Amino acid sequence: MTRDDRIAQITTNIQSQTPEAYNIEKSRKAYPTDYHSCLNTVLTQELIKYNALLIMMKEHLINVKKALIGEVVMSDELDKVSSSLHDNQVPLKWASVGFLSLKPLASWIIDLNERTTFLQNWLDKGAPPTFWISGFFFPQAFFTATLQNYARKCKIAIDELDFDFKIYDEIEHHEVTEKPEDGSFGYGMFFEGARWNSVTHCIDESQPKQLYSSAPMILFLPRRNRVVPAKGTIYRTPMYKVLSRSGTLSTTGHSTNFCLWLEYPTRDDPDKWVRAGVAIFLALLY
Image (cartoon, rainbow, N blue to C red; front, side):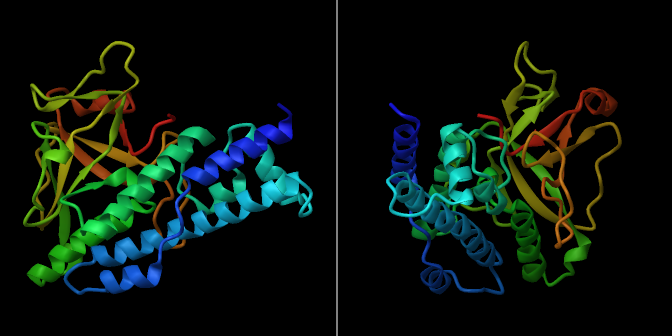
């Protein structure tokens, strides 16, 4: 098989897996801007961001196949895209408009499909009782919307709110059938440098040769003038989108990688986890 044949095969395979762009107008009618449900706005924003990626992918995939058989000129942009596809890398153009990721192309495509399926289920069935945090393009907006919903419900200033974190380690996210009265359930997170011990209900040392482990589902529960737990009883854990931990401040003032601080109960001195570099991530390398 020649290089061009392999690229054509990869392109066809990706085309068959890539969903069509969302109908934004239809989704806006189904989930209009609502004073009592800021999550409708989050959904629309997510669809718009994913659409930009899906539309670009479709255009590039069609034109790469045409360029390979001489129907259009193999421009420098298309040549870079085709080379990336051949090398199992996400094309830089796709990465520039897509979600932050360190995955190789094959894993990235699977991740993209899972993300779009999550959003499509939301469109088809309504807001889920639990949210896959890793599926959000911009999870910070989801957290802000959860606080805003509570602020509007209780008619208080959002600046007076912060999250309580209630950990659910005796139930899986797919077993939850009802939304919480306040706040939002979130799942799909991973520990690096530690693990969650469901017996002691605290963070604990990782198992031998285990780099990463799944974190339990959390209820992000807004609280007014929240009292921080006693020093030494919790470890404030940073949540990042990807393992690099590095990021930049966007025009919104949010980091492109860091999301927020979580709090996990600990029986050990929190400094132990600080020295171990324990953090939560929304996506791994595979």
